[in-house]
Length: 473
Image (cartoon, rainbow, N blue to C red; front, top):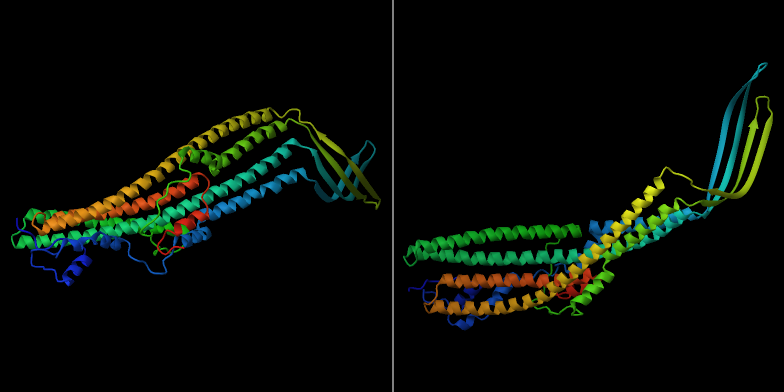
């Protein structure tokens, strides 16, 4: 079988080979197979090219998100709003003072069988009253509910913080993944383009068939399509990250070429499940909602109970008749006011039944949340464990694909393999490197998600991952 004149290799490798005096006369593009040993690392360099020194790292992106992410800023505002419900509810237990003043022009008519009198006079007065609740069960429960609501607001904010950490890491790695996929797609397209040119040249000289040209053309068209998709995915990922940061984030620090692969600590799935059920903010939120629903029952039942208030006040009234006669009255009073609800048309009983049903619903929502968090903890723990195994397996696959490519190139030199075989092995190496990059990002993201499900994700997790970036601190 007659060998083709040139195999498909990355431009950098081909240029280097020619620069070292390798023959390009149709027999072999390589002097020895030993020069291929670093081929895989050249390909890695294509995908992980050094970025400018001004590239933003994960910690900088996180700080931008803390300042600009509307979801996080809104969560902080919600917490401040819910905290204000405590003094509002406390006001129902504290004294209240009311001042009233009045001025009236009066027209008074009185008729008897013998008289018909009309009197016009002015009356004015004021009143001051202090009211101190002594016993008001609904108001007391409302205050207790506000305390539970304030705790719920804290857990809401904690959940939003956990979510922000995961979203930032996910958004950052989504951009890096899409960028590497695009780099690999471009490298693969360049390799297929060289094969297409080679197939056409060989067809013109009669050493290849039209089928070879069509196969190469189909492979090139597919590579172009994959590059377009990869470019679109990268732009989508960048737009999603811009939503978090509120600004441009085109240049990001890449992940270091080597990262430590560590198992979860503790390396016991059920311990993570137990921790998640005990600390996850979403469960804490459901617990506070159940507490509030239980308190609402007591509050509704309190509508049947009497209320007792201490009342202290003064009223003053000044009346001046049309004849100029003035009458002043001052009344000081102090005492207690008892209010006993006797019948409210059945509304209170209906309200009690409603709150009991809502409490029962809150119980089930809490149970559902516990089950969901338990399932999330297990699946996320397994994702970390499987991610470890996958990264290690793909590392080995990368080595194997490099060796396979070297062997294929050597076989092509000896006339046992074709340039198409070289291309296929080269594309397999590209795809292995692409899958390895994705697996590394997925592994790190799963680690953050596991800590988030356990309610333990903090800014330190961002800093730890940031140190794994190239040049990270």
